[in-house]
Image (cartoon, rainbow, N blue to C red; front, side, top):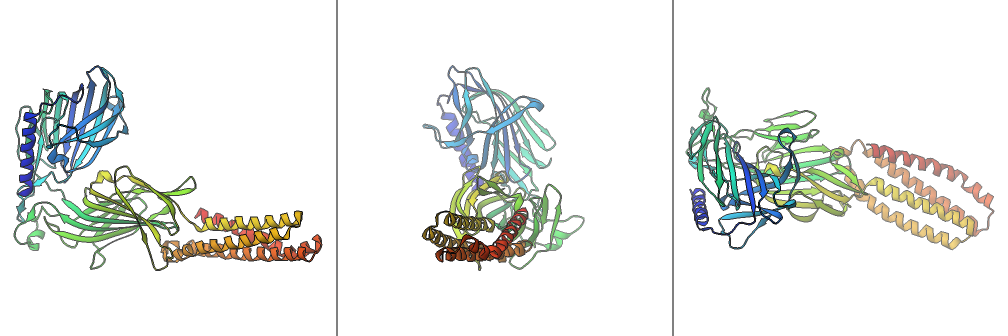
Length: 563
């Protein structure tokens, strides 16, 4: 009863604050029409609002204030505000607006405030339509809090039939969408209607600032109250055509706790199975070309899973080893591979990973999400772009073949819902075998250029200095190449490309040796004051081999890039 008692106390404080609130309006804005829709068909309360805003004052306004009762604001997981244009089918939403938490002076602590930056100042008499989407966790409270295996699962929602706002509201309506038509009780106010699994309140006209009419809805919910107390997603990027995703779940059922003993016989009884409050399955919606999918726990592989895929998605239906009742926990891991070409793209000489942030599990609430993006060894100039605030840090991960270790970008966020499953971008300069070979070829070209300069100027010392500089550069590039070749052996997905990469490296080294031999022959010829024709005859066979090797290296580079 502690959670419910806390909500009641917060509600009483809110009503007291509203009773004594005598603060003037934030501005001369008026809400000419408010439509609120609350969807509680899952464990997450999703609220959408359409607000038609009118500036009835003489001065332009550039900010709009959203308010929530504190007991809702404390459980706000996601909030977005956009503005729309047009009506009906022609209506279109525009870009999301900047929203930040506000703390206006003189306002009660029992109300949460958020400031919205309007796309442009709203002048006198102008109107604007705002679309608000909010997702709340932990607001559907099991009532009763403990039930037997045979009982149905009932939850309670506390809200307001009238829109809590610092602005005058000319017309407002509310609809609450329930999972089914089984309603234990609901607050009956003026203009209240029940239509199947939907309760409608309003319309209510000419509401004063901070109007509030508390309502309680008590109803049945068969939704899975699955909460990941902790989820660690590791996204490992390979040079060799694959992104490996591994997800470790610590899962708990946050619905009404099971009272008494569990009977598997009653649970499996037909035609009247018991235990409707438990859930057996979870659905994960993976990217369309996910492959090499597995599902396991500490005991080993779990075979009770089903997979379906098409061109748009891959669905994995997983079944834990035992049904989960309220308060019960389970731990498991799912993993899958993704094609690198679907998620890694080029941008201004760098590469960026474009991948979803949150869990693929449908309607899962995650109390603590840790996303670890493991980049290839040698990656540098790393930056991250996210559509919402996250805690960011950096680590190094070592595998048995790593030399310097792989950079890891760590992103953390609490109270995560499916609305957060948006794309994040990790931008970095990736050290690739092709890049290093290209640098080696550029060094070869400089060596060749030093020989041309030698024939033109006869400056042997400058030519030797160029050789020494090239030797040093090629040694450094060889060191950079070593960890990439080692990582090639550690990724099974690289089996297709591995022979070609090894051939490329071998051909470049052979080319390097032939060039060095040619350079030595030419310089020695100049030191002995041999004729130009004599030097050309001595390097003729070497030059033919160099031309052939260079063509082979270019062809291998093109082949690997295509793969």
